[in-house]
Length: 459
Image (cartoon, rainbow, N blue to C red; front, side, top):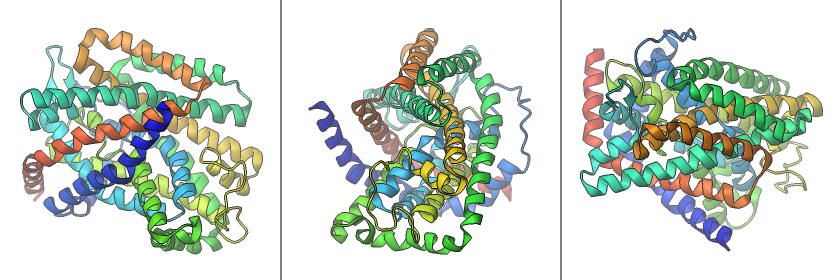
């Protein structure tokens, strides 16, 4: 009964509220900033890769700009890029990827605003520790009791969605894939995860930043290398695969059946929902990382944040999607007819795609290794976001108890899965969006002023 109620609420939020809010705020900021995601893309790219270093020698409080980006990307590039994209394709057809691109394009403007506001409203506590995130700009947008309520609602939602249940979702993926690929019992992986994560969590922001700035480039390189090899081996099918994304974006009924209107709604909603879970623009999660960056002006971190969404969706997620379409949807692929064979689901679709080229053994191992890196790095970042909100609600004294609770959830997640738990994760993921997006609309003037100042400073 409860599962059915939560599923109904999730369906309504993802099909209507979420699409309107995410596209609405993305369109709004694209217009208000005169498409900052295009105008300032080169600036952001140069900021990220112009002085790239993995040395971890940042001495000031908080993080370096690249460490903040790496922490944000670690949160963005998780199971959503593999399992989420797979689920979107299976349910909404290859065209769902097009709508994920649309969400991401406008999301680049949204995340610019989030990063700028996180920088503008961050505070330094008496111990010299930097604190920032949506709760602070939500309170600025809505002074008084309304702001306190919305900030508290956001904090509770993100603690449940990412800090607790979200970490379970990620660790469950690690436990399941490692058991399949390597025969390692899930409970063993659970213990290993708890030990590694506990060591990093206790080290605080500095240790987490040092880990993410190293692990993110490595995991991206491994996945990109494997994906590119597959596409080179299936190069003849690549043009047709890209064509499918555009064709079935507007004619999804040709691949998933049903009427045009109903099929299009499924394709769009799947793209929106999975796009949010993947790049997190508008959700309010990654501003916590961007708030900690040491930069000269808020604009400087805003343009860096744009690159995070680009890497997540237009590079990593797209590569995974094209690999799936190229190997499974073209010619004699097992999904070429649009009928999903028994045993194929979102959790093993990418694995099946890579196995079709790399062979059963190596294909399973490759996806398991990538998924481990993706999910593990996401756990690290989501825990940070949860900790910051737990401290906001209950003070620093709650940091250690909260960390111990999260470690328990991580272990439980590796050995147990429950449909209600995952649906609740989706529910609170979507509820986070509401107060965050409302604050983004109200604080438009703050963002555009920061943009003008940042652009003027570059001339």
